[in-house]
Length: 167
Ligand code: A4P
Ligand code: MG
Image (cartoon, rainbow, N blue to C red):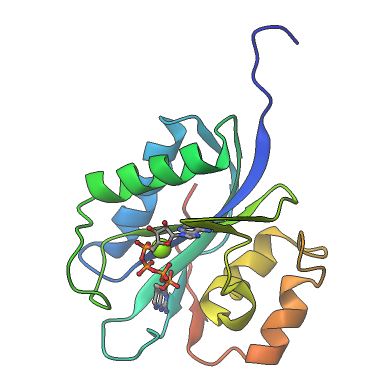
């Protein structure tokens, strides 16, 4: 297909625990659409207990998207979106209006500073696995196990599905 870059399937995790959290998640999705990241489907919005616990609760979600961006371009684009939505460096564990993490890039494995794919902490984080299980039912790329199975191991404490829709 001439003139059309190859598009890759990517999975992105969204988190917010500052300001209008739901609006931050929605704004991030609008910004992605404007930046060559076409969101195909979105999980529910989950309210999740913060890890570590000394900060406000998060809203978390996961989206599946298609993009022609390469992994490092995708990371740079997500960082730019975080910045536009008001995220600033500073307090290391402090609250953030938006956090955008690349969970998967197709079935690629990548360890190139500063980017690791799949995201290294997927299997231990209920706040990622619960929404991920909604949008990826089968075995996860690289990890091999379904999200639901990994979630059963870490438990569902502190994870609450909300009725809010992202798309
Ligand atoms: N980086 C490397 N690999 C990736 C990747 N696959 N996707 C680098 C995105 N970034 C990646 O991230 C730090 C650096 O990781 C980036 O500059 C990038 O080069 P950051 O977003 O600047 O900082 P961060 O998010 O605070 O660090 P980190 O280590 O990603 O934190 P986590 O693990 O994302 O934890 N509790 C609940 N309930 N819900 C949450 O969403 N999130 C965090 C953040 C803590 N507790 C939470 C939640
Ligand atoms: Mg992050």
